[in-house]
Amino acid sequence: MIALPARVGCVRGMMVRHDVASFARGLKPTQLIGLDVLLAMVLMASNVLWWTLGTHRTGWPAWQTVLTCSLGVAVAVRRLLPLPALAVASVVMATDGALSLTGVLATALLVYGVAIARPVRVAAYASAVAGAAQLALMIPMQGITGHDYWGWPGMSQSLIVEAAAWAIGWSTRRGRAYSQGLVEQAEERARRTLVEERIRIARELHDVVAHSLSVIAVQAGVGHHVIGSRPDQAAKSLCAIETTSRAALGELRSLLGVLRDDDGAEWLPGGLDDLSTLIEQTRRAGVQVELTTSGHPHALPRGLDRAAYRIVQEALTNVVKHARTSHARATVAYAPGEVTLTVVDAGAGSTTTPITEGHGLTGMKERAALYGGEVHAGPLSPHGFRVTARLPYATDERTAQFPVGADLEGA
Image 1: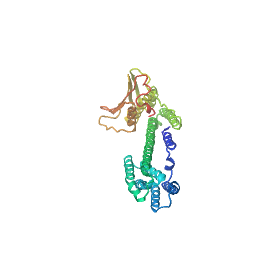
Image 2: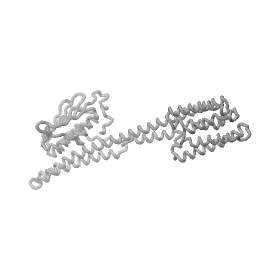
Image 3: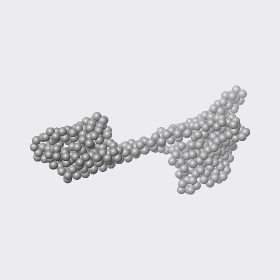
């Protein structure tokens, strides 16, 4: 019945297909750290090869060992300590040509990690400070090492690469946040739809079961009372119980069939045209209902017609259950753009009787609210109770099929 969870899966599938870091996010934290350690070892080995083969330098000074190991440690702990790791790499970058291409790649990777792991403002400030530190330390550090292999042009190119890495990291972080937002929105829609579906099912079950059981209970009581003295009346009560129970079972089967159906077919429980059947069931329960129609009866929007039927049904159910009367009056008044429903009984209610809103009255108000309508219920003086519902709808033929709340017609 509810298709939104599948949409959630589609959004998650899009994230898996389009996010290059999805594989890494599927690994455990210890596995990610292990990959970083392996990457650090590869970069350290690459730096050794660059030093010996790419620069034609001889020997391996002690400070080069310190820088190479420092860069490797920074890469290895980049997920645990992204900002300190970037600070260490910035010092390394300012030394002896930033260890050539190895240093550029390592520092760009650390800048990328900071851009992903930290808020935009923090990542921007940290990357800018790191770049400024590299420029500030380049000259004194080259004086210490005695080498000027990298120089200003190389440092400028390195900073450009780092800026590009930060932009890619920022874009990746933003894309992840957007995708996660889509997932959360889809999940929220799914949860909200599930709640609405549960409420709809609860209403339909209440409407079907409450009215039918009220009629059955009354007829069973009558039959039990007269079975000895008036067996013919008891037989009529049994017939009424049989008819009402069969009708209720039919409605329940229809409702359960919709719940099992995956294609979303709708179950239409009735409309105002079916009020005669409803009133006949109520009469079998011992309440004579006088139905009056005013105005010009005409076809109503499907969902609103269904809601109107359910409101009258619930009002008559309350008469059977609570009013302790044998007479009620139901009125359906048609007017341009609205229909007004009124159910009045002369039962035990009075203006001094406190009103307790149960599931029935709450359900009537919620149904009316879906279509921009309202329900008023209260006792009459000296006795009785009245329920009045006003349901507006669009009179334009182009919009009559889509009234307010039409997307929730199943409610």
